[in-house]
Structures are given as C-alpha cells and as structure tokens.
Length: 112
Length: 115
Image (cartoon, rainbow over all chains, first blue to last red; front, side, top):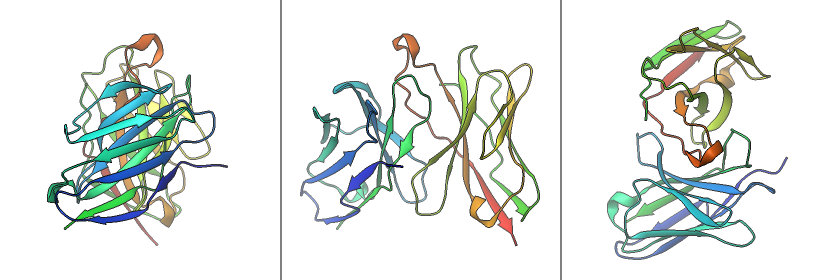
C-alpha cells in the first residue's frame, strides 16, 4: 500500500539559511499534519491542513510557514534557521472521516 | 487537552503477552483514546483507538475501563519487533469542527522485549 512520502530524507543547512521540506500524503487523504521531534524528545505538533486550508496551528515558530497545494502535497518552509531547529520533521496524513494518522519516515534536518 | 499518564518503561519476554497501562482521569466524554508507537528511527505508527468499548485489531487489543479513566493496550504475543515507545493519546472528535485531529504526544512507555 502507498505510504506517506517525505523528501528529502536528510538535509544539512547552515545557520540563517532556509529549508523546504516536502510531504506527499497517501492518495485520497485530505488532511496533512506536520510534527517536529527534537533529539530525545516526543513529537510536537506544528501545523495541519484540511482540504488545502490551514486547519490547526501548534507551536510553530513565525520563521516557519507551510501550505498544502492543489494536489494535496504540503511543504514546510523554514527560514533563518537556528541550531535549535535541528530535529526530525514528520508529516502525517489522514483521510476525512477516519481516525488514524499515517506518518512518513521523516526528514532529518541538521543545522550547523 | 486532557493529560495521560504512562509508566516510563516496561519489559517483556518474547512471545509473552504485554499489558501497557494508561491513566487519563480527566478524559472528557467525547475524547477518543488512541495508541501510537514509535519504533527506533521511524515515524510514529497507529496501533488502535477506541471510545468506550474494548477494541481488537490485528496488531493489538484495547481494554477501556468502564469509567474511561484508564485503558490498557494489550499485545497478545510480544515479538522483538514490538520494542518501541508506546504513546497513549486522547483526541477530541473531528466531527463538528471541534478538532482537526492533531495528536498531542506526552511521555510514552518504552517497551523492551527480551529474546
């Protein structure tokens, strides 16, 4: 079965640079979630989209923005990167009316 | 969000049943009880969810107390591949626009399975 695809899987950036993470949800899933997991931490919700509109917002820094496109894929844009942004970033998708979220393999971002 | 409490860690032997407890004494009447697990170096994985009745699927069983203030995830025969962090999460219903389904992860239970 198709799973959530995230790219790139690994990303290394310098401080103050920008990064773009991409997420391709499972076909027919209309909701996308982004989570951040710092080293030794539990995943923390950042933001979600339902039918291409932002539906919920968590502890996402103002330096980050995200959107969901017409084909339902989503991108997380991160600017002015800081050392503390080094983390695993997970995307998850869910089909409307269903409960389960399906997570991608994550993008490991390292900020030097 | 209502809070859940889980033991920091548990151990089990391979092929034995495992009962992972979760306390959620402040659960609201409409919160669903979700369980996810995270294997090393992987994204979280959905395990099971329920509202009031006990639930079974191919991965596990979920036993929910009558007052809904606690629940137990049951792995019937633990394997080495079940070693993971198990998260018990309360989630408001998505119907009616009250929630869009975000998951609030707390401290989960690290399950170690011995051969």
